[in-house]
Length: 382
Picture: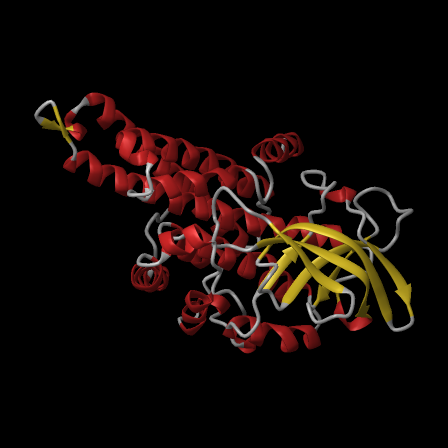
């Protein structure tokens, strides 16, 4: 068993770290304060090959896997979680399902554009009344000549204001058993009747655009059905396994940033004639933070490796997301505490890390949903 990253994974890590330090670090706090979507940062990410990291080579990508993506996302999120989640959604929730379930025509039409950064991808499953209960969506797709007409409202859509392609789920058979009769569609924002609704004002990841979508008789042709009609919920659940690796990777990145900032501050801040890191109360916080970070990263890398091998990994993805997000929030809380009053100000980055960390326990399946997934899979594996 080898716990070291190979040369290709290290190359991705080093390239992502250089990009994060050069492009994201000087701007992340300002983008957060202004709630400004960093288009220029995404253009540079595309130029570096990050937007197509996991897209197959024959469609213009680098053809790398989930573990490469996890390594990339840790580095980005250690500096800017807004850019990190934008790339996570684009890769795991849009590029991945198209690459796996798309027709050859769909792959050739969309994957090269997604890989080149010409089009940013967004994922739209959640609705105002259907969050954790994702099978309760009401957005309706009615059969018409040559395709479907979609009507409904979607919520919490990452990159909603800037995406050029939405993987969007709607009910195609309202009489079907719950969790069935749902279909995945490829929807573009230039479709008649499609509108971006309210942009959310958020506690954290403020440079990431999160919006509602409003659909009023939006026509989607048959050739933009992703996968099989009425079988879209299976695609949604399978896709979310990859999305949970992405958000767990985000949690690892924010967690690492909290530890690194706390180590620096604990060496610089002097009280009672000594650096505060010399005191057991602080030293033990740092030790716990470092131990939990290693455990989180190992869980994430295991889940990503299993998904790359084509192994069943729903439970492992949920375990990684569950543990890493909780550990990240504890690390963020401890980081602010270590910084004391200074940590409660915008002078130090831990204030932003604290706000960004909170969402990791909520989106891509809240903490209690991850516990539910793990417990159900434990019963199946008995």
